Length: 254
Image 1 (cartoon, rainbow, N blue to C red):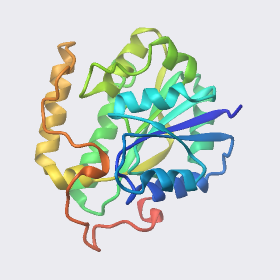
Image 2 (tube, rainbow, N blue to C red; image 1 turned 180 degrees about the vertical axis):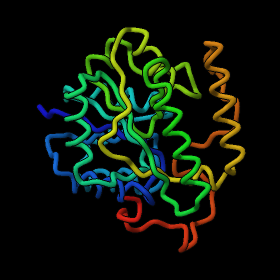
Image 3 (cartoon, rainbow, N blue to C red; image 1 turned 90 degrees about the vertical axis):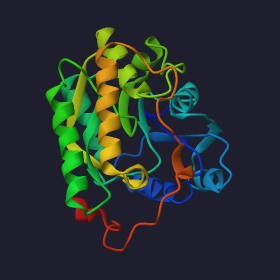
């Protein structure tokens, strides 16, 4: 039985998934299983996942996809990743699990850096880091790109609420926190996250959506209907990044 189960919901992620899987393969920590919950991709996502040794299961939208993957997991610890992230440090998994153990955390997320050299993107992501750290003790936020959680915690709160279609990851954190489980923002390392949704929707639009979502959650209401147009994963239609924007070497982010 592996110590860690890595669960990745996907849909048409053939372009970005290999970079994440390569960064997982290069980790110093190896006691894990890899589960890809795929939402009927029409590209080569499933074959790519299988070629890296992942178990491919039927997925769905992000929340249901995470639940489907977790239901097949055997590890005592779970981590949910989005398909378009990269683990910058080869010690990311080892250091993150050690920090959770040291701080006695039940669930956690990590800080982020963008896969972009644009100053505005770096500023936006650092603002997110500061915001999550400020609310760490009183209002935990666990964005779906990186959620570490003990499997017992995931099961005790019945996973992600599949009736919620937007901010389901933050609802997940709120319910875990309300149930008395201990949350922490990991300090040991960062992950690199894609800016493809920023490129598609625009920086200002994404910032306004984030603010709207936060205000909505403060009222303790959940989103049962998608308030915005949403296309999952690799179905996003965006222009390819320019050479100056693309990050091909993770060392650039350190």
